[in-house]
Image 1 (cartoon, rainbow, N blue to C red):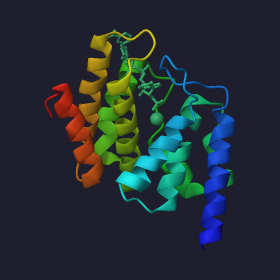
Image 2: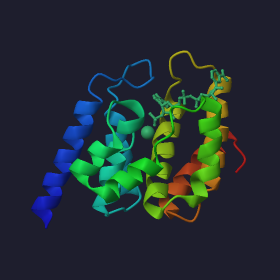
Image 3: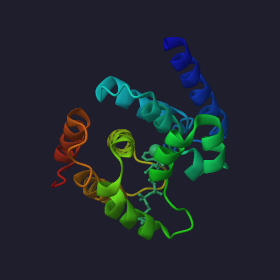
Image 4: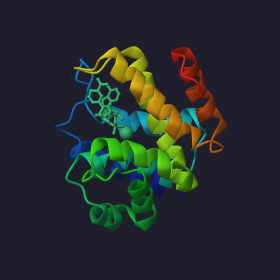
Length: 180
Ligand code: NDP
Ligand code: ZN
């Protein structure tokens, strides 16, 4: 019921906020990191029309294992197998070199579950909008452009998942002159 959903949602935001508490985004303003997973979840509800609570919770948790000391076991114990599995699908293997991780995101994209594809689309949309408005500390214009090109390759292999999110992404690629 609704009360349970509200309570689960608050538990999830609280968990993510605590895990990311000392982290900042890469922007000059040093935005608190938690703004990102909350923003990704908001893109899914507000723009993507997503109502599946598992997907929203996975979005809130999507960078906890990749960027904090959180383990998949911990996610499973607290939030269950389903959410653990979605978070697993959207987590890069940090033992691999950066370029290999980027390549694997392109390779794996079409094989992801519907739920993981939604989180991936919203994550890319959030990050690309961020990059449209500001350049991260130490990044050149070329690097920003490379990121757009790489993201467009991932998104190309996530198509047929969510019309609204995909058209918003297409709009950004068009604005940047990235051919999709
Ligand atoms: P990173 O993967 O290091 O950074 C991009 C990620 O940073 C995003 O996916 C996002 O991930 C996170 N992020 C945090 N803050 C912001 C923000 N304000 N705006 C956007 N994203 C943010 O960078 P790259 O994608 O460039 O990956 C590194 C690759 O770049 C390597 O392959 C390397 O070879 C190459 N490289 C290129 C350089 C160049 O000048 N061309 C220089 C150095 C490296 P999340 O959603 O997980 O937070
Ligand atoms: Zn993210």
